[in-house]
Image 1 (cartoon, helix red, strand yellow):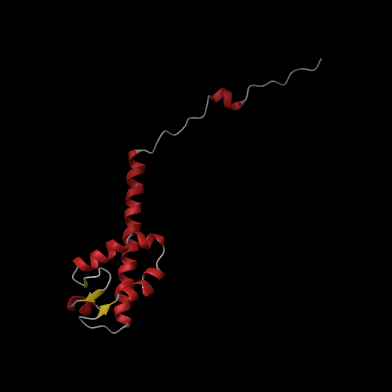
Image 2 (cartoon, one colour):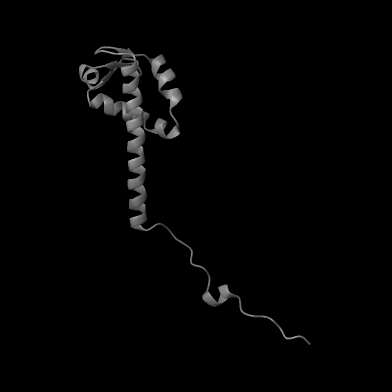
Length: 118
């Protein structure tokens, strides 16, 4: 008869591997701050796209970016992450006094402050 090579498995000597039950508070905080920072970057990119369009048009105060212009020049050129922050970017430009929203909700009118910033 041959001798048996039944050695205990390494895993069974150490015990079952520990399963992760969740993220630590520090890891959650780190991920949230990273996500927030990325959202800020995407929002700034979208705001820059709006202002760059006005600049290319050599716009002055009162110049209007129509709904068609928004669709053709902004919405078709943004990715999903930028699309997620599109509304926030427009609100930032509005609250900053750079643009005003027309009645249809999509047409944007450049303000004097916006024209000065170009």
